[in-house]
Amino acid sequence: MMKKIPQISKAAGQLINQVGAGLMLSDGETHLRIAYCQREKAPGLLLQTHLNDAAATFWLDEAQWCQWVAPMLVVPSWQRVPEEFRHLLMLWTLEDAGRVRGSNNLPWPASASLESGEREAGLYWHLAITCEERQLDLYLPLENTAWVAQLADYAFPVSAGEQQTVKIPVQASLLAGWLRTNCATLNKAQPGDALRLQKHWPVQNGTLCLYLDRPLAVVRQDDHEDNYFYVEEVMEDFEDWMEVEPEIDDESEINDEYEVDEESEIEPVSAPSLSPETLVANAAITVTVEVAQIATTIQALGTLAPGAMLQGTATHDGAVTLKVAGRAFARGDLLDIDGALAVRITALC
Image (cartoon, rainbow, N blue to C red; front, side, top):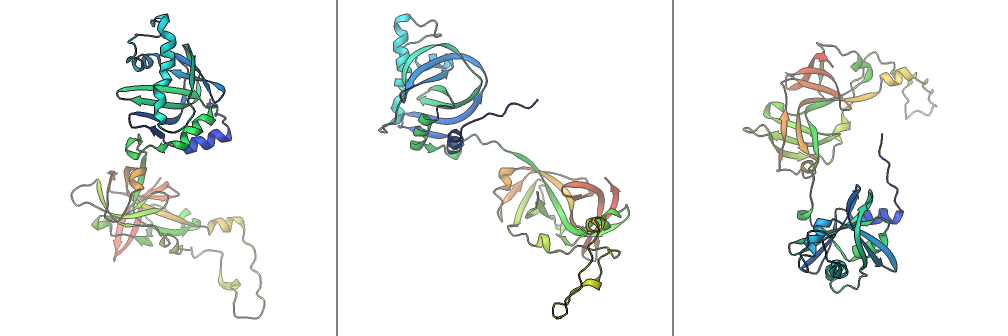
């Protein structure tokens, strides 16, 4: 069963976009990091506050709160705090952290009460306050957007070095080249047939085309390390991807009888409409010829540049795979015919 999609206000959505990977406020000693998160139900402490003339409730982890107030009083839990110190520690919890605002005249929550309670499952603003070796994580329900927006206006983005970057794996293709043909020709393909590549690279020299949903770069495999590739050219302009004319079957129903002479003053005769079957049969499609696959990351592909090194685990078994729209339909062997490359189909997938 699909999880319920959270519903948020337009203002909250805009603020989530502004916060991005995280924002930071700092006075040099105390730091406040702002982030957006989704959390499950959990026990802890509920800090009731007055904020912008309204009530706001923060959730805190009890063990972390004990560590946070240790400079004032060392306690093992909230329940073990002597009654006469509870109000003082409750006030000091956020008062000490308020100096993170520096000279900015930003509103700051005033503590009203602190008690044991549960955090409900939902969407929260995560406010992580650090001071020396202490840290306090505050979770504020998402509807308290106005105050977080005020903080965000004075905060700065978390630097790339502080962000927890997740490497996104991706499987890319290494192509010998490709060809353009039509459905009618491809439907007749059988083991033993050979298809000539209309665009190809010198595979014998280890030069291949790096391909995802389109050609990305021309790479050359290192002579000694199979999993290292030198980027020779980044294909920012891939017009040659479309410049190859498809090889139309001789039996195509399209003929020259209805060609229009543009210089003639005689009004041309309209060509008869073709049947849907004929249109499909003559539809041009691109067949990629995959020599190997390389396991890399989206981040690595995003930094491709001539002269750079691309590292990834390349897998191949000696045969090539013919694909249309990323789906394999045949396996085969490469043939070098007087400098031109062709694929002899050995099996259909």
